[in-house]
Length: 193
Image (cartoon, rainbow, N blue to C red; front, side, top):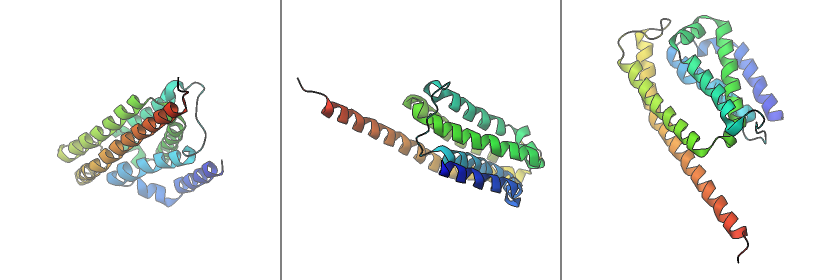
């Protein structure tokens, strides 16, 4: 509980500081620093604890739906423009992504392995696809930023794509290893005929 309160206080202080406006001033900082930062702070507030959201969250899908909805909404070009031009909207983005991280952390253990794997693969693929779109598209996708920032964002997304792939593969391998170890324990604990 202390950890969650501490992380929440840090997030609030950051949201009220001048650093919050700095984070959303350019497209690369907004999409590559601010969005993951608020999400990771939400994860950190809830992850590692014993909190698992069970009621009204079958198989963790409610928390997963909130997370996907938050990410989907804040990736719409008009939303990105609004974040860059309004401190209020930037605060709403921070709050919703913080909540998305917290809800996903509380739901993740209930999400079936196949869905986790599919989401990881989709996340890695979207990182690569958005990188190519931002890099190769010759018109502005977000009117608040310039073409150089859009291309720079695309370059950085493509540079980060191998890291995202490694994280997804590592998480999948770890989950399979833990499942195999659990099955082995269950077999050893089972009475022999």
